[in-house]
Image (cartoon, rainbow, N blue to C red; front, side, top):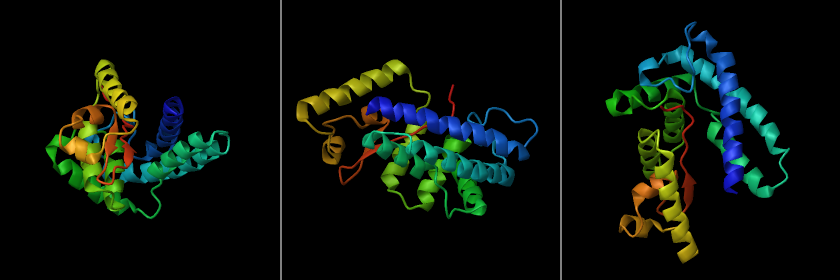
Length: 205
């Protein structure tokens, strides 16, 4: 399942990158890698228009990939990816205002625009505030050294092997399992003990 998750993430990022490059050219003739743009490159309406168009086409292309998968587990993961890039019902103005508000907090300026728009979408859709805060904290940690990710992931896997389950929300709050280790592993457990994957679409160096 883990391998399938990363393969699908690669497909998703590839789709987003290709179609952003195609459609976002309207925003600037001096565009750099769209996955590297952050709060200092925020282009207001021109960028958002390109983003929405690109995301719509990427969603269409990505949905085709679902039907090529044989594993039900992979299809489920793929559909989760589709839901992440689905911006149906969200207007250019909503994204513009949301990103403006997001970057008003100077501590968010290093977060890439593609990730900032994802955060705005989460807020518009009324996602769990703790999940949104964790997603932002995860993005502020980027780039996370591979050795640190491996160490954190090993602790998470060891816990699962020992207990036969994920750490619970209460155990995390009580400090029985490190919240920071979960974040570094790209994982969030909500108050109902549901498992969420944290994502980073931007390129961080």
